Image (cartoon, rainbow, N blue to C red; front, top):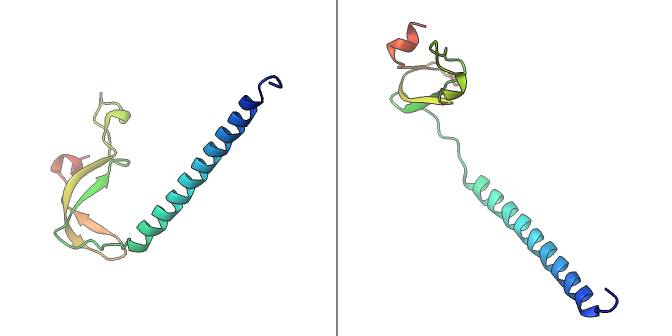
Length: 98
């Protein structure tokens, strides 16, 4: 590399450009996160809303692999609000039988 000093300066400039781009990307992400979090508000659920339920605790039909079951099922209508984030949801009869 000593024979070609222009290569060394080119590589240094390229490394600086990559580091500068990396820093700018991180700064942009931080700015976007702050902006999104500033406007975020938790919306309470009310009776009649449609919601998805987790499929984690739903029993899987025999012959069907767990990984083929969707992570969330629904949408289902909220029937009753018990407060403290507990709701009665109108799920299909086939789920109730299990």
